[in-house]
Image 1 (cartoon, one colour):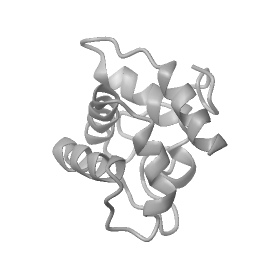
Image 2 (cartoon, one colour):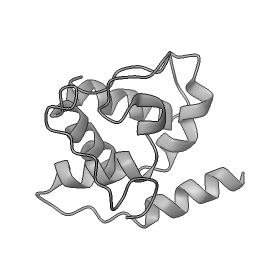
Image 3 (cartoon, one colour):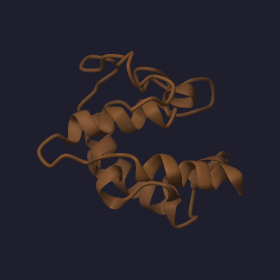
Image 4 (cartoon, helix red, strand yellow):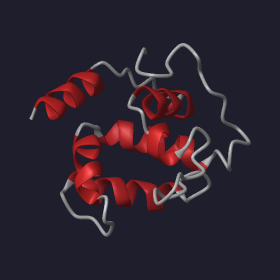
Length: 118
């Protein structure tokens, strides 16, 4: 329960700037720690899937499903709290960021937000 409150608190601090979904998505990806399981470049780590280069619509659909508690992965329980902490705008922003970043081609690790400081 404490993790859920922490995630909600983190997500409440995000500012979604219209016209900057790529930059907003980058902040969400790194500050929420997505890179810990999905890789710094979205390349996937161990059994965690690659996200970089997937279509934006696919990523939105998957995050919306997870937000609703629906998942087709053995790690669903791990992802649900993260997805629930995201607003629709944040889901779109992080999906845009990942869809536009093919295995690190457009990704830069933002040192100022890596690890949760936004």
